[in-house]
Length: 477
Image 1 (cartoon, helix red, strand yellow):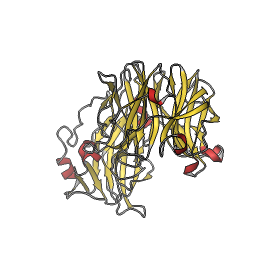
Image 2 (cartoon, helix red, strand yellow):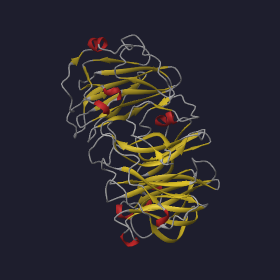
Image 3 (cartoon, helix red, strand yellow):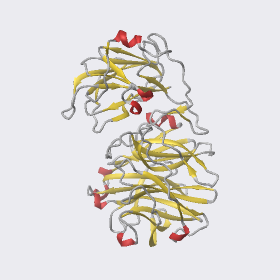
Image 4 (cartoon, one colour):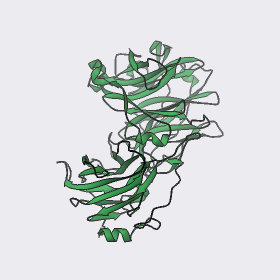
């Protein structure tokens, strides 16, 4: 595990170096809990909707379709998985490599559009589930394969222009008037069927030439904006661009679309955010704000791993264009969307040292420092490779999650709740990632609890050492 030059600290020294307001035995000040912090989910390709005051989030899970739901966006990291479709129980032709789910409501039914294959990437096609009733959680039944053109096709979603539904997706398009992998459109006759000509849309702008994918839409001032991701999603330059059309236009005519040369969301090296893209838009619970959910990484390495879900507000320029701004770094306090009831979780930083509530107590030999920069919450963390060194979090609430670095030199931690049985958790990752959710307790009775992280002194065969990192905990009331 690569670290800057540091000083090895005993527990007594740790207590002495605690930050003002968080010294041993003294509780840190009560924070503003009208905020949330990313990541919202350890998954990629997020699709987030608000319905009847609740949030419903879907991300790529590979072998299944899963929805996480919470009354507040701040509760999504603590939300349990609700599986609505298991690939192994389905047709083997569409049971694996399940990607990019999108959740839409038409005519009091919910439809999940997703991409899947038989295990061969080139065989990816697009499919639709339909709900039995008007509950986003289902149950669902398989409805159809959609818009099949006999070749690799991914990331399908509907749009509505002038009252008519159309289906958009990404496809290898040399035989359809487009480039290597472009965005296409076809008319829909119902939520699960397309018909008529297939048209390549003018999605020429982008950081890279090889991919245009993940089309999704947002409407503002009688204009539909179709946004899309460019570049291979493993690259740090993965970014968002857009085209637009008036709501009374014909989207099947490419010249009716207005194109824009500049990205609306792209990497921010200083903040440690790379590859932001594959996204969805949603309204705040009171309907007054537009928001975006997207995935990004905090490594510049070319990798598909550790893309996590983030969210931030969308505003509008005087020219009527969406403004997202720089992607928000992990761990940043983001105000709750308008109408969100909260409360947000309370953070315990690794430097909130002590034996009181919302503090962490260390035993054994630990080191600390700020060399991890924007990969760590508030720019610092603690770490130890000494067997049986512990970090104990004390809190009042119903659930706690641990976020920290995973690295090529990290080992295996043993974690227990309220002194109960330990479970083991591997903190190894290649490439290195920061602020990853490594552990989450089950729901606990309201009241005071402890979570203890113990360094086992063990690691998997790929790891270079046994180090365990302590960065932050999030506590839900």
